[in-house]
Length: 219
Image 1: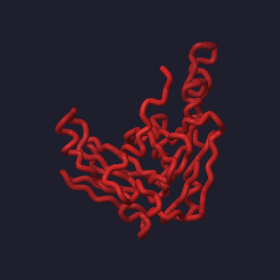
Image 2: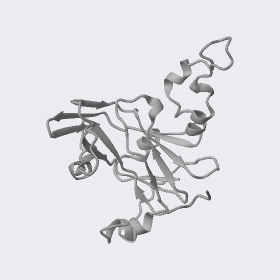
Image 3: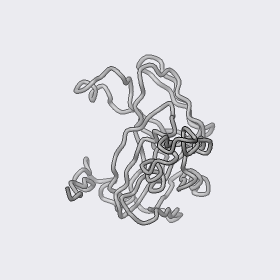
Image 4: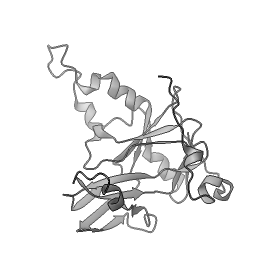
C-alpha cells in the first residue's frame, strides 16, 4: 500500500498510520484475558480472535489535526488545526436528499473529511468504523478500488443531539483493512504524481465503472 500526501509533510503524516500492535486501542493494555480469573470461559475481547485479526490485518489512521465542529440548527462550522493546512478539510454532502428515501430520525448531517492524502494498492481496501475505540463519532464504511492513486477521504454522519464534536490529534478515525493475506506494508512515497494522467480523477462525471469491483467472492 502506497501513501502520498498533497499538503501535510510525509514526515508528519506517516506517524498517523499505525500498524499492529501499535494500532490496538490503548485501554486494551489494562484489560485482562479473562473477566473472571478462575473461569476459563469468561474471555475478554483481548482473547477474541475476531478482534485481534481485525487489528492484525488493518492500519489505523489517526487524526493529524485537532478538530472542533460546532453545530447550530442546520448550520455548522469546523476548526481544523490552528493554521492554513486544515482549510477545506471538512465539507458537507446533500444529506437531505439521501434521508428523504430513508430517514430514521437519527442524523442531521453527513460530513466529508479530506486531508489531502492519497492511497494506492493493487488489492482492494476496506474503510471500517473503529468501533473498539469507543469514540464519540462513527464513520461510514466502504471498499476502495485504488489500483490508481485515490483520495483517502471518508464520511461521518452526525447525530441530531450533537452540538459540539471534538476530535483531538491522534484519535483513530478509521481502520484500513486490506484484502491481501500477506503482511500489510506501507510505503510513503515522496514522488508526486500528475493527477491529469489519471483519467478517473479529472475527466469523467462518474468513475463508477472504473472503480466498481463487482462480485469477487466465491460463494
